[in-house]
Amino acid sequence: MSNIVVFGSQWGDEGKGKIVDMLAQESAAIVRFQGGNNAGHTLVVAGEKCILHLIPSGILHPGKVCLIGNGVVLDPEVFLREIDSLAQKGVDVSPTRLKISKKTHVIMSYHRALDVAREGLRSGGAKIGTTGRGIGPCYEDKMHRCGIRAADLADPELLRAKIASALEEKNVLFKNLYGAPEIDPEAVYRELLPIAERIRPYLADVSTAIQDAVAGGGTVLFEGAQGTHLDIDHGTYPYVTSSTTVSGNAASGSGCSPRMLERIIAIVKAYTTRVGGGPFATELFDATGDYLQEKGGEFGATTGRKRRCGWLDMVVLRESARLNGPTELAVTKLDVLSGLKELKICVAYEYKGQRMDYPPQEQNSMAFVTPVYETLPGWDDDITGVTRFADLPENARKYLVRMEELSGVPIGLVSVGPDRAQTFTRA
Image (tube, rainbow, N blue to C red):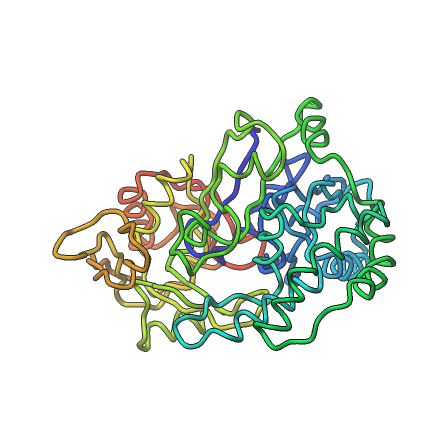
């Protein structure tokens, strides 16, 4: 097998965790390369649900090496809660198979406080929809060159000095801008010491671990979080996440050469969803939107917030194909569309009197586009037990073929239910 990158082609929540979990069976190492615990990957194995926020989805497969790359921002408390929960289920989460890059930046308690304070000052449409987990402020410190890196957890004196330095400026903001109490750097340091003690055994050179896996003839699976249209550069700015979510970041965010990225899989939900604020051209506010939300169980894995639902947006998917260069699509939640008499696909936008095949580039311009729809017939059959493309209802097959035609990318995998077993290849 070739090395594989799995990325979200919409606004996240496309079902990446399930596909990663499936592909992990044939992989030697699974790497998470960006984002933080604002992302949740839901896995269902033999009817049992497991939600992971930081640890790569491959952890459920015995013997697989799971790596957290330098492009991730790691909340150490969440990481420890996650490994404790997995250990209780009998999953091996020892440092021999679970490793954190020493270059990974650490989310501190003051990052979370800053995140919440900022969003609290915004009102109405100005709210970004942040999860309040400190992801953005942690990435800011990384770029400001005052961040805490995972390796610092093994150097107590350096850790203490960096915390004190980081809080000098932040305490001015807490006191004078946000009207919040100042944070004692020594208290932060003392609270972190026992956590750091538990994290230290997991620190590793992830670049070397990837190199070793490839040298040994194994496949490396690169796992992204969120989706392309939440990318800090290419998403619906400013309603975006704080990291680079496109496939090219798999190399930079994990510490390997781009030449290692061979098979690139775009995960696309059979319809479109979005959590939080920001423009959403095909959003539905009617009974069909409610149907998709209820039947699809569209609640955020991390926040529990309702996902906004709408028709499949091929303009968004076409842009994802341009930015990421996928070799194939993996279509998820096709079964949710069963029971709808007709289906709509957004094939283009109208914007300022022009028809557009790709999203306009100006800030917030997506809020002013009008979707151009194509209508296809639906189907009533229950497809959750289907295991071959040929056994899908005719209209379901036509829907998938139209996705291929409009995106210019072949479909490789189709998912018709939440369980690991409810996925089959296109052939």
